[in-house]
Amino acid sequence: MLDRGASGREIALQAGDYEARIVTVGAGLAGLRYRGHELVVPHGVGECPPGYLGKVLMPWPNRVAGGSYSWEGTSYDLPVDEPAFGTALHGFVTFQEWDIVEAGSSSVLLRTLIAARYSYPWTLLASARYSLDAEAGLSIELSATNIGEGPAPYGVGFHPYLAVDGLPADELELENPAAIIYEADASMIPVASHDVADFGLDFRSPALIGESQLDHAFAGLPEGTWTVTLRDPASGVGVSLSSDARWLQVYSADYIGRVGVAVEPMSCPPNAFNSGTDVVALGAGETHTLSARIAGFNS
Image (cartoon, rainbow, N blue to C red):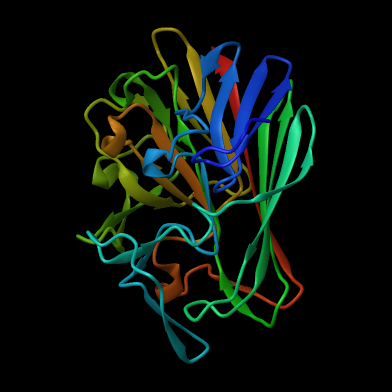
């Protein structure tokens, strides 16, 4: 464990050929290596990372249009922290310090309070558990419990940037099993759904990303656990993310130089607080959990 930096404190995990680094600000995944290969875009504990690298997204993932929403007949106004698009982005905890509850050589449990406020008057206790396994890789469990009055509108996401040793996204092969892609408006809010083949971004079979620009929500994922893979076809080295979340955002990291691909499992789509789609009504005493796993491979 290191002294505090811009990203809080760092916890190093190790199991077999895997090494991971977790930081306490945003309960973020700051690094993951397998047999010496970088599996995510890394950052140091002394940095404020760009592009929400590795952050936990609660109590909503992605964007809320205009920062405004209604719940049970009452309207609320969230802070607009993405002024270019006029949206409230990625919840409250991405730059919040989380407490280390348990820490071992291969796992860590972090926890933080999502305090009630005028724009979101519910109190949640959030937790993030990272566990490394020599065979399975890195497991992530993101949970929130309503410890106040309910029900609270709730959604969760995870924002890792998958990578293969820092290679440009253009040179990597992506496989994404989602069948439905969402077209977004100028504020990056989904406005129409399309078949991925009709939209020209069909990666259900592995294909080079090339010059494709991705920053889209996806649905139509297989029932149960699905897997997205990113692979260097020259070396066969790759990384996979698996989850049973029903929504996915994929972003070709244009803002940070296309050095990886953000693969973001989400419990609900962008602007869900307005559309109502898959928003969890988290009752008092209830807990919701999103799970994911990241693993390396060499095919």
